[in-house]
View 1 (cartoon, rainbow, N blue to C red):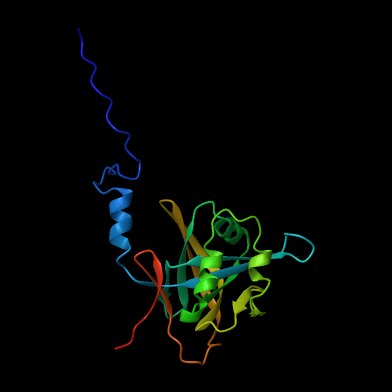
View 2 (cartoon, rainbow, N blue to C red):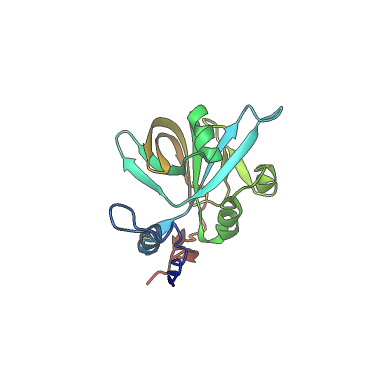
Length: 190
């Protein structure tokens, strides 16, 4: 009589190493140890409804690239609403979130939302003169940008933007909102 070999337990795609030898879980765990600032990226979609619609997303993959000319970079998930919009609309904005804006970050980090209209409804903001995008009141700093280049990198697109305006709306001395090991954190001063 032949004995049946038991089937191996199902393996999650996340635990399967890539050809390079690191799994998604291993990579995610290693990168969670890198603290990052939190920003709200915003843009105005003029084609959505009679007055258009404001779109926003939380990002931690944001950085300064160059001083001359002033350039920044944000990483967007391919096929996300913001990625699709910034492929069409050349101007956008960034609000660097303060530690008291954790709820704002969480609100715009939600996946599979139908509309951003309600997300902006009770937030105090001004509309950028160059981009028409919301710039959050109380943010540590705000930038308006024009896309210079887009580079597809794996499952994300790196968008390099030329900074058109920069402002410092918050003067209350609060610190930045940071993201570390999968949670929003406050930066502790020593």
